[in-house]
Length: 184
Image 1 (tube, rainbow, N blue to C red):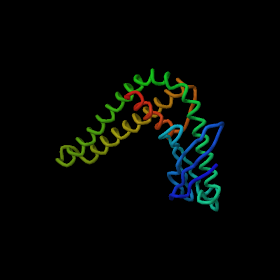
Image 2: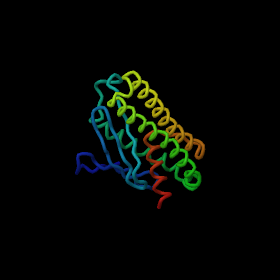
Image 3: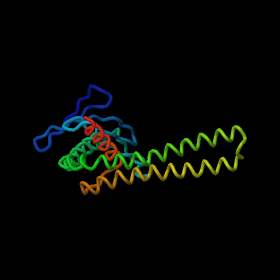
Image 4: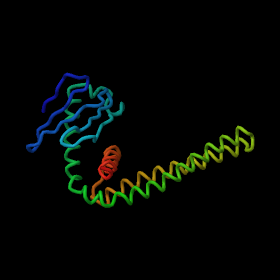
């Protein structure tokens, strides 16, 4: 393991099973650390948050913070290696997921328009404050539900097609990767 100290957040380098894994620390504070893999994969991130109550005296700014960064990088690489053989399968089923998400996003857009309309009606005094609050509450609940449905669809997509579950950040990064991969 080596790191370059020529920047505020050093690059990380690990040799694992004959592969050189390169990453970058994105954030390193007392309570948070985040990394991005640069090679052999690119654009995927992971991180950790250490709640104050868990151990108020520990910090990612200490030397152990670099050990955590290296561990995150290695685990991210291993996870991506597990997923990589499934790219053709994911690519084949991804358009259906995109259509489902698009449909849900249309509902979100409609709710956002309803919120704007309700605000406009309130300003013009065509609805009462109480009616406005009812509109806002209903539409915000629908937006929250729709957004959680999108998260569920993404999670279920990966569980179904690679029989593997991973964290929210990596799931979204991989979703963006698939979007770009299909468009290219």
